[in-house]
Image (cartoon, rainbow, N blue to C red; front, side):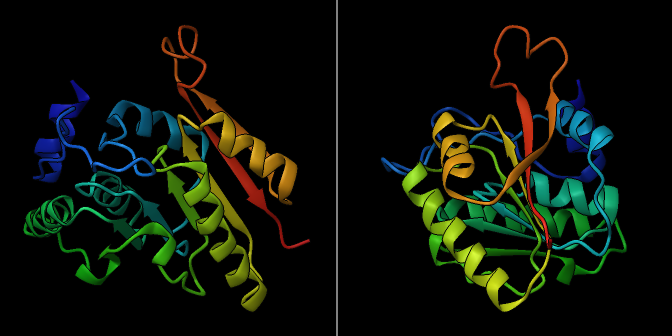
Length: 203
């Protein structure tokens, strides 16, 4: 129900099909985060308009547009698949037609996740199981190098977090789990149906 509601409200089409794959061992098939799951997450996790969010594996731009609509927050989507990125840009343009939002606050980059240059202001990073832990380690290293240049608090937001991601974070980094948001009705059947937020504090 919420899928159709939000797609109509935002004037976009971000639904995915199982046939839309990246044909890569390290990059996983496209699947957007359900709107109902996003609504549940942001009941429990606060986003400020001063935050700068990066969505790795943004697909057709659902999270980017949803967050911009809800919180007026600037967000960058990283997508290796040019066809998906073209759809994301089309959705952004369609969304902007019905809003007065600044186009500069929704940006997309067609590149590999590990090739994205972390910006000094980027402080919130979203992952819906987009790639293997090997790629994740490279991305995380880029984030940590950026923090060395510009000290700031960093949050990593995971939906359907892989065990490999969690193990690496908890065994090899200073990130700490600060919040868990299980999805009602779904988590009881599948423990991956939850959001995990890890934080690297300034202290």
